[in-house]
Amino acid sequence: MISSPSNIALIKYMGKIEGSGNKPTNASLSYTLDHLRTYIQIQPSVKIDSWSPLQADKIQTLNLSDKGQEKFLNHFRFLKNQWKIDNQFFKIQSGNNFPSDCGLASSASSFSALTLAAAEVFQKINPQSFGEDIKELSKLSRKGSGSSCRSFYAPWALWKEEFAESVPLTQKLHSSVVILESGKKSVSSSEAHVRVLTSPRFQGRVQRAELKLKDLMISIQAQTWKESFSIIWDELWDMHDLFHTAKPGFTYLTDESKEILSALESQWKKQNHGPWITLDAGPNIHLLFNDEDLKWAKTYMKQFNNYTVINSWDQK
Image (cartoon, rainbow, N blue to C red; front, side, top):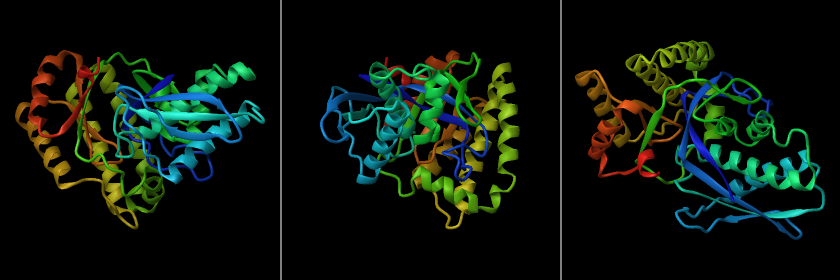
């Protein structure tokens, strides 16, 4: 069984270059969420390639829509073509240890896991020179899900064009996710990438993102925690402004999301310290704590006991 982690972008990938196979309009920087994983098992089958939910301990049963299954199997067929696998068919089973389709980047972990698992199986059948090259696997995975190309690296990944690369940042983080909604999103991430291009705010977006990426890299290297928070916070609202001003506009933020984000902002204003805060394309809130704050983080997160919370320190 092969697994791969999710990741959370601090500088977001939002908007694709048309006809490029998920190449981004701007570079993105992500932190790998090693405790949020997709598990995949691939076995020989007859007649057709198929997908079914993986049944295993601590794995949540996936319920992929017909469209979701087709997208997953289409990527698998694409990978078969790359390895020149003819007249052989496989049964694919997958599952997550966290909710899917709700803004926790389950497509990133799913498609990176599928690419890794397929590479392991196909290399035994028809070895290829690219089959164990992580950059090439990252590039192939990008075709199925853009953000998945970042999940091949830990703890930091930078994605500019064809594939992601590891980033030599030493900042070690601990992750908490406050789950406000675990149901499927009304607007998929793929649709969001299309709609943001219609926002008047998209003009200048690439330049804003690239400048913030440069500033954030410098801040993380210098370990200026508050400055990094400010850049990440600004990027969070930049992304959600694109959603709100798109045509047609949409939002993932719920009343609870806004209430918690306001309380978190107040924490920073009062204490001049707190976690890094971000969201993906969904209502659920990601909090990142530095290594020195781990003891404090465990106490701090008790205020969210009324919600489902996934802490990286609880998954060890």
